[in-house]
Amino acid sequence: MIFRNMWARVLAGLAMISLSSPGWAEQSWDDVVKAAKQEGRVTLYTSQVGVPQLDQILSAFSEEYGIEVQKLELRGSELFERLRLELATNRSAADLSFSGGSVTLETMGVLQPHGDIPNAARLSPEFAGNELRLPVFSQSMGIIVNASVPKDKRPKRWADLTDPSWKGKILADDFRAVGGGGLFFAVTYEKFGEDYQKRLSENRPVFTREIRDSPRRVARGEYPVYIPFILPDTLLNKGLPLEVILPEEGLVYGNFDAAVVKGTPHPNAARVLLNFFLSDKAQLIYAGSARRPTVKGLEDQYPENVRDFLKAPLLGTQEDANVRTQMLQRATEMYK
Image (cartoon, rainbow, N blue to C red; front, side):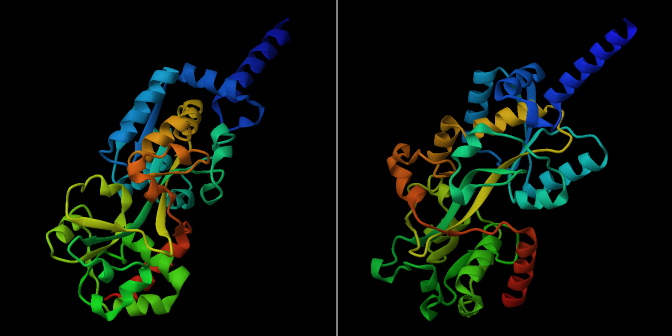
């Protein structure tokens, strides 16, 4: 009798562990949702700061599942460091990370496998993700010019920016730093070769790290062109004398990934929120802000005012952390 009671307690304990540990194999999705509701809360660390669409999505999630969401907004570097310290001190507070540059978090070892996520089966091939992170949306990048630039003089391709007529006239995110500029350099270096960057460097682009002000500087006429322009910022600069150009070779893009944090206090709620990020509701909220959905089958529902942005061909991205580091070093050498 004593042994039967002991084994009953052991089996009950194992059942609880199966609902709360990374051993997802035996769980049905209904079990995951049930356990998530029992956990009752989920903590999200995000570098998407001050974006109302994220708040809309989190509110919709809480309404649907009755799970409280605590959100902590941090700059990317701060988010990475906080997750590193929490793991190192065995004091993990985050359940889900939501940021760009998650390849760095992957190499840092602060993420754990997310297990089966039903909506992951709907991801487009270019946004497949992996066992540690799944892309929720991509931020595509193009070119903007001051509207006073004659149409026949505007660049139509990334290659056009190497024309000597643009010397000293290009405002650009710093290619030597992590962010849109560094990503642009890495992708175009890979796709077009070193000679492209050599010719672009001869035009002496003016680097800035004040990316929010860059479109306004072009609108004021300080520079006629700015690269790479994050397309969702079009809505923030509505009414300014700016024209967006979608280069013929395709758009450079960077993914914003969601990932379960190692040591998560609420592993099931983290997975349910990750799945919700890939739902039609969440994906279309992001589509309305010109952030490109990563799941298939929603193209006909894209808002008319951003449809061209969301359907434009893609040139590429760079998700190898080691390659990114090498590219930043190469950019530093080429753009002194």
